[in-house]
Length: 244
Image 1 (cartoon, one colour):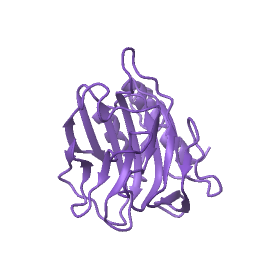
Image 2 (spheres, rainbow, N blue to C red):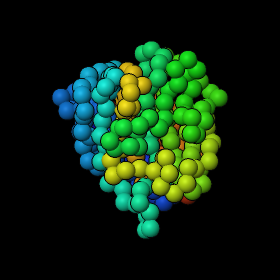
Image 3 (cartoon, rainbow, N blue to C red):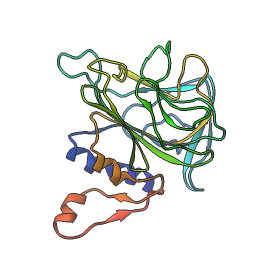
Image 4 (cartoon, rainbow, N blue to C red):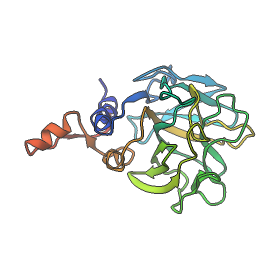
């Protein structure tokens, strides 16, 4: 297994601690099959994408532009009594070549309304009007690891490189940030989905804790390998470099 895969799979240790499981992982390493999944279902591509080099020469990534997006069949079932998925987490390792409105994800599977998280044109912040926008800003041609954690009855949070950038209230059960059976990545209904470069995307079936997100760090950083908790119990910690 590639080191990049191993590093992301390390999060399977973090996930049980937060009662969450990785249900989808996409690494974009195969330039001949950019939609292939490492975990879960393959993505479906609407439009076109272009394979490219990622955060270093050994990493694979994709460029996806206006009018194109991925459909992620996450396979998460709504909780009892709920119509949609209300607890989830989403990781995206991304950069962008030019500042504009850039959609990061869209919860409406028919893509008939506004996306649900953006790089904001002009300000370079992250968020959407319903949640508010981060105070921190992004820059062109810089890799970021964004993790969104949502528990719609309680909170909606955006972390970047392990740090909390936005702490917002939830939108209520089955509200705006609840998920349809599929999640659209980088989609928007009216062209606010400008070019983005993506190295990794992943989704969990629950809201990760702040500590779990911090442990994932930034793009390319070391993350704890499997059995971290056992190793800590005997006074050791092994890490691997997130590379192939």
